[in-house]
Length: 204
Image (cartoon, rainbow, N blue to C red; front, side, top):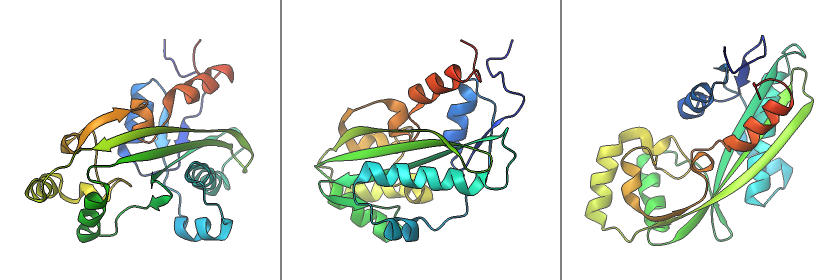
């Protein structure tokens, strides 16, 4: 008997293969439909500065954008992740040169990942929001190592806000990690599963 009880799949408003794989692996029937929004413009217009609030804002707006033309029986999940080093926030690096510069800035320091999610009903009603944090400490790696890492990771350094994937060679950048594994991957899964069970979408 399947764990997913809804006749409609959950729509993930993202192109993240990792997030979609996490949902499917957890028994959630999900499809992906990336949101077409200007994240930096939305962030600037909102005036929001707190990293967790920015993650929730962007998760919410991604879900709303995709849900706008959906039937009210369809539910859309938005997710976003921001990275903060003290008061400074980072976005995805636009190119490999910027990614290398960012990793040098994070080297030997502890940064915080803020992961936000939002579920929006078709038409735009917000049903659920949540955010969580994880703290990651990079080791004081050498620049020759960084060059080796950049070659090994390839363009994957441009795919995430931190320029790394812990499920790949990016794990070698770190000496300490504090926080939920799913939060680090950009999808706080346990609170989402709880909400889906309470709504009757997942078997209890």
